[in-house]
Length: 271
Image (cartoon, rainbow, N blue to C red; front, side):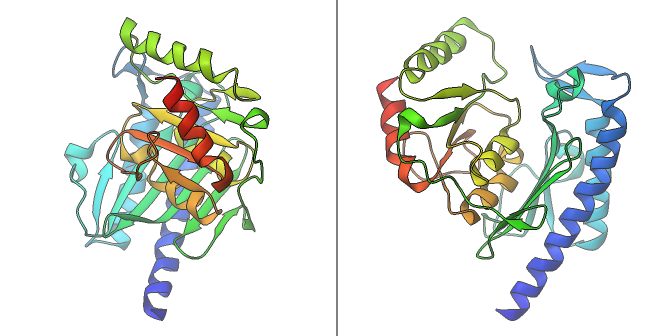
């Protein structure tokens, strides 16, 4: 086991190094003119996304040539789309691209490593406000090297809830989303939509947010890093229906242990 721990520390160091270097690119680009392309109706991609992904994958490939890779922008070019038991780096080079384009400082690099399909190492780095969230399975979660833990809030009515509107704008999706929000607003203290799934997970991990759910986000790269950090901070990560968290399902919920069942019930009541 000692060897495993040693190699996990090495993997974490690689991820931190990659995140910080990509963060430099994001920080420079954040204050400059952005060249924006549309991936979908409201889903954006910039040259910065692509440059960051290339940098991260090149660095990780060099250091860990036998590992597999899943990335947001260029999975086809770089690696695999299917998650196997092999050590697999799952990367969102820039989570919060819309924020990045608008100069809203909630952007991050998210890097997760799964081993046996289990999120095992996580790094989420916001280079604009210089916050580095890290976690290794079984070893705790940290913000800028200080230990973090989830909130101790037990009442839904006093909870701060985060969610996201997602990227689909068809009437059915939007109506279902707004109906759910309407109902939830009577049950929680307030609502935040800050535009980054990875940072929402880290917000739960460090107690800024009490509960978070999102359905229909981009893919496993949004949650792979944050999942480790939430669990290691003493939080729960699960499917919004209350079932087990599935990294490939595009649905996620996170909370402290006291609020999990209450959130699941509240979500069920808004169906």
